[in-house]
Image 1 (cartoon, rainbow, N blue to C red):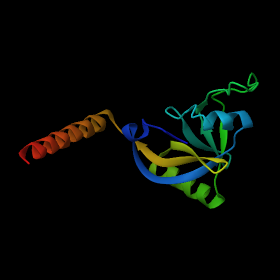
Image 2 (cartoon, rainbow, N blue to C red):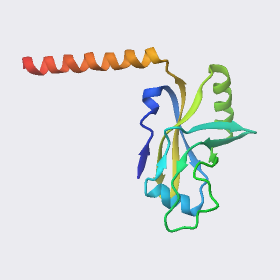
Image 3 (spheres, one colour):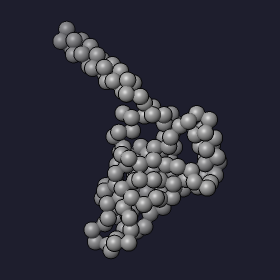
Length: 146
């Protein structure tokens, strides 16, 4: 099971990637295993020395009583203290954001792949799209000549 954040590469320049565990309830784990998690608008933030995932939507599990749980609640992420200190310093120095790239399971544990990223400007997105189109046209031209 792997759920990807498709908007991440389009909206951000990705720098360093790392893995973190995520604290979930039993019903949320079952829902995640059914791939009912949305990471498009989510981001991670360090609050009081702990790492949290904010604005990730996990659809309520259909067989559980989830009337008390908010689907967009803030969830704690599990990382080593050394990683947390390193991330905090990089975020402050380089003005970066922590965004989730994908959510997957390793055995019985649910993991989240995070990346330090810098937001792209609109002109950078247009330039990247133009570059991809040119590369695609060159590939077509080369195939036609062969």
